[in-house]
Structure formats: structure tokens, C-alpha cells
Length: 221
Image 1 (tube, rainbow, N blue to C red):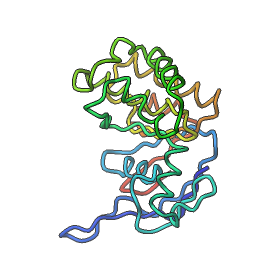
Image 2 (cartoon, one colour):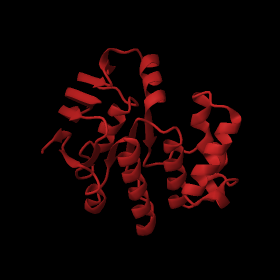
Image 3 (tube, one colour):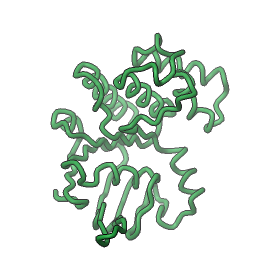
Image 4 (spheres, rainbow, N blue to C red):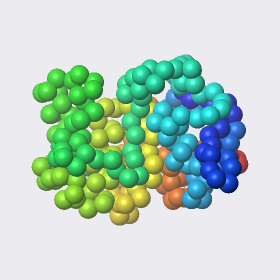
């Protein structure tokens, strides 16, 4: 599903070039569950953003589902992302002006799904994450953990082929975190969803099939 060859990303500063990713080579098969670990500042979130086509990179090659991402136009990358990738952001990125239900429903509009099907899908996932009672609230009325659950529900509602999760349990209590890991495991085993999660938790990382470790923007294992 994913192949990268010497992906390198940097930013230019007053002190010279600072590398965020350096010579990253990866091969991820369809249906794998991968955990990405490393200290803060090691490039984990940057790598996830590059793989999710939210960030560009300066050098290297990236192939996603047979498509050469490094050669695609921005509109082509956006279309590829829209139809295949779900993204759980560490900072939620919920839309303040929309209710919980509307935030979760939003991705379905881009897939041109009928209203009746959208409503049914939203009702189902609200129940799955036990947030039915929050459906008419706005993000600012929610706790950090509740916003995290909404972000997860929004990413999963389109049933993506690839789920990218940046610290998906970072703001959840231990019980909620374990439930999310069980949901991820079920999606991976039963539906074949490919999952890449960034995590600091060794317990959560162990749910994956294997662990990729980053240090200073480079893979070290």
C-alpha cells in the first residue's frame, strides 16, 4: 500500500537547513497495523502528515496504492486522500461552528452519500463511541477527551482504507484509550483497514503488528 524511498523534508532557518525527515524508507502492506514511536521532535507527526498528503517533502519518492504521489498535482493528491485516508489529528481540528453530529457527518458530504445514509451512519457511530448525548453540542462545550472521540468518529465514518492516527488516545482516560485500541484492532482484523498510529504509549504500540522507531527524523529500527 505504501512505499517510500529516501523521503527527506527540511525547513530553512536563520541557522541553516533543519531536517524534519531524512532518508525515510518504508514498505507498508495493505492490512498492516503499524505503531510509530520516538521522542518528541523526532518527526513522527511530520511523517504522518507526509503520508497523509497534508505536507509536501523536498526529496524522495512516495508511492501510495500504486500512485506516484511525488509526481501528482495538488488536486490529484487531495482526491487520493479524500477517497482513501482517514486522519485523526492530535489537535482535533474540529469545526467550531458545527455540532458534534455535523462535524462527524462532514466527510460524508464529500463522498456524495445520500442524506438518509449519512444520518444512519452518524447515529451508528455516535452510539459506538457512546456520545449520543453530545450530538447537539459544539466543540467548545466538550472536554478534550470528548473532542478526541469526536475526531476519531469523524475519521472512521468514511471507512477509510488507510487510517492515520496521531496520538489517538492522548487525551483519553485509560478506559477510553483501551476501547479505542479495541476498535482499531477490530477494524484492522475484520475489515482489513491499514492503520498507522503515532504513540508514546508502549502498551498501545503493542497492539500493532510491528513498531517503527524514529530518531531525529530517521528510522532507527
